[in-house]
Length: 233
Image (cartoon, rainbow, N blue to C red; front, side, top):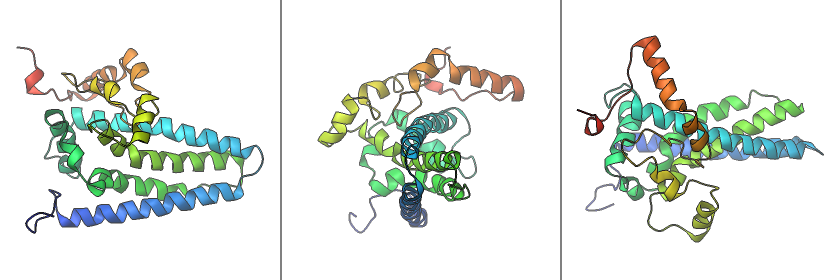
């Protein structure tokens, strides 16, 4: 708060929704972990560990998918997502350090808003079987890591991060600076995954995003967005 003005640059109403979403998501994830651990026994703990890992890998893909969609499709005027998703991702290319000035709520609020419905629906899955327990835990894990994705992304742009985070980055357990810099090299059309970044090399090797864009254009006639700064004359 400076001169009586909030430090964030969006509406108080949206911020209130973000705070509510973060609170709700934390409660649902904590309750989900309690539920899973409360019924697990024997070898099922191994399945829980596998589900947590699965959720982490899925979160990396989901982060890449959302990032790719925001970078390549729609405009800032697109209803519902234009201002809160498309605009921040595209401005981020021009001002990579901008997000490092966002507080905890502004950094993680939007991810919470889209994740709460998924986490709530996970409770429809029964945990009385090993398969059900695995699926439920994987969704809890996915929700938790999706929530943290923008925080990992922010740390990959900060000049200074906590020592434990720096160690995780060096171990490539979370998104690291050098890896993420590939995406921030013009024309910004690869390495979209921003949770751990593990999926970026294999997806890039098979040209997954490019081939998907070509398929979409072939089926719908809609071409992926090209930043005018990088178009060839």
